Length: 353
Ligand SMILES: [Fe+2]
Image (cartoon, rainbow, N blue to C red):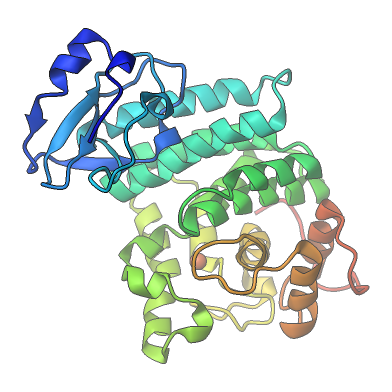
């Protein structure tokens, strides 16, 4: 491990020699997770091949991890911070994303990057510290910034383009799904911002139950799961609803979305095989966007990612369009998708729960 000594102040240089015990509880962070140009909210460490940690920069140091020019040798796998400090990084990212989302003078792609960082932080907060009231409150802040940012189809495209580099699939699909919900709600004429934010929050946390499913099952495409793996995987919607229900003040709409986001209008979904008329109105939207972003957002283990038109054709023709027709039409209008003509005479849709 080497770091350019000219990039570090004297105190940090001294501390570079202090090694931490590997037993101390540390968590990995992405290089761009601590926003550049701001004082680091926590001490940042490198992990050595012997399992020990070495302090790279102290809290308060105004530097970017990307500028520290740490050697990418085999000995350095990632940056680390103390698990107990993770909240400080999350809160800094949320604060910046919330402020910047309202700054129309800053281009959307730039604001999207800050939002991506904040969303990734909140996802990792849930992974590291569990799903609790604070994490849901942080999710609300991300969604609030997202609702401000996504004003048009073009904004959605730019948010989605910014999230492609995030690791894994769950984080990307959560953020893309929430952004798409904002567009669909607008297309459906929803007037109440609080309703739009509850819908987007539900989309953002819809898969929290996956935390309890073995990662090797989560990583598989559904097509390749055994019957047993599939039934284990399908418990995530019920379990997600239970996790959210246990957190005080979680809006009932958000719990309903977690429970019903794999149902469909024809009663062929899970866990309850609800038909459209029995489904929560918000879940009718999220079950469609869940399928749509799964088809269109690239990620590990995905072999056949489709563009928007191809995805809609797949939903309409291959899947037989098992979704609320009014919402399908709203999605097509929101993204300018031009596929086969659909009769808009299916199930109705209203904003009220
Ligand atoms: Fe799911």
